[in-house]
Image (cartoon, rainbow, N blue to C red; front, side, top):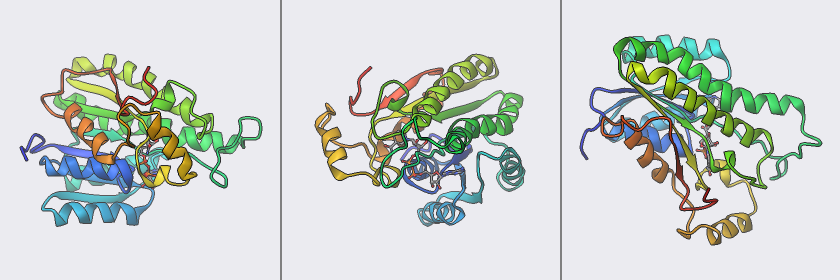
Length: 255
Ligand SMILES: NC(=O)c1ccc[n+]([C@@H]2O[C@H](COP(=O)([O-])OP(=O)(O)OC[C@H]3O[C@@H](n4cnc5c(N)ncnc54)[C@H](O)[C@@H]3O)[C@@H](O)[C@H]2O)c1
């Protein structure tokens, strides 16, 4: 594989599982040194182990992205261990379920609303707040925010907090593309459709079967499908692409 990301230092939040793990692995395979941030430290260690086993460079850090001081603190560790960060993948996300179902807006605990905002949306702000200044100083950076097709339409198996945060990430992306573009930083969002990961396995299999039938490409996505898009957007070849929302959805919920 061409080392399109040689000498790059990347941070992937939520890199301990699913899509984040696949992005971390793809970046490492392309030559980047990758810091894997995850609230589940063991999961982050597992991803780092997989990367090291494949000959790549990675470090694992336990970090709740909803807590600014926690992101600041791992930011200092990464600077010492790897150096200045060039690429930030704001991927950590949650979608709470209750016996496999999302809460209705009519009964949703306001604390659950705040929790989802904290991880999915504020977590991305924290990442940019901690790692953005270094990118600006060096005049190069690349940021990818993990949105969802749920930002743009009604999807029945998530609660209202989830699309609200994913739409918020699109606004964040467009604003940052304008604010940080003059400093050589491209900022884009990915909008995955139904991707086969642990996050999405907690539902009735019939739900996924129905989605496949409603997807022009007639399959669920894989974490690798999303990682391929992230790899392009963070490469030099993709650097002129900014402020965009790239659907990786097999045509599901075309908008
Ligand atoms: N799987 C899909 O179909 C799908 C579709 C659209 C968007 N997404 C988005 O992609 C991202 C990754 O989803 P996934 O399916 O790989 O999920 P996943 O549950 O497999 O992985 C999410 C990871 O984030 C970590 N995490 C959770 N809260 C955290 C926090 N506060 N701080 C740091 N890490 C935290 C988890 O420990 C886990 O390792 C999410 O933002 C999700 O909303 C997923």
